[in-house]
Image (tube, rainbow, N blue to C red; front, side, top):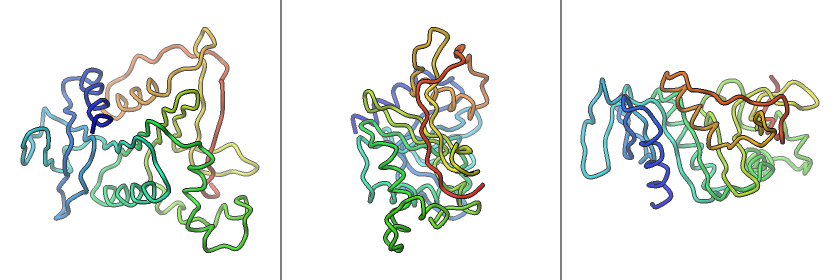
Length: 223
C-alpha cells in the first residue's frame, strides 16, 4: 500500500491538473475491471461514477492510462498481471504499464514471457522457443506498453519496440540513454515523459547525448 501511495503522490505532483490520479475500478461495456492500483483519467470532462475515500469507480471512456504497481514480481504474479491487462484491453484501455520497485532482471522477465511455451516444449534453448510463445501480432496490444524496473543499479524501461536481434523481431527494448554530460538518464524520468505523451502534453524532453549506457531486449515474435 505504501509503494502504491508513493507513486500516486508523485504523479499527482508531476502531472497536469487536467488529469486525476486515483485507484479503483473501471466500468465499461457491461464489464468491470480488477482493482487498479493507479488510474489516470480525464477529470475535466468526466466525474467518477462512485467515490468513497481514495477509491473510485470510473467509466472506461474517462481513462487515459492504468499502472499496476508491484514491490517485486514472480512468474505467477506476472502472468496474472498480463491477464488483467488483456481484460483491460478488451474494455478499450490502450495505455497500460507495469511498475516494479525491486524488479527482477530482464532475463528473468524474458523467461516469464515464455514460461508456458517452455513447459510445453522439450527444448531448453530459449532461442528455439522464440516464435512459439503465446504472443503474436494479434494479441501484442494486450501487453503493457512499458515495464519499468527501478532496482538500484539495475533499472530499466522496457518499451514495446522492434528488437535488435539476429533477425527482425518485435517485443520489448530498453535503451538506457546518456544525457549531454554522458550520464545515464533516469528510467523514472523517461516513464513520466511517456505518461505526459499519453495525456497529450508536449513534454520538455532533456537533451540526450549521442551515446547510450546499456541496451537490453526481449524478443517475442517475428516482425
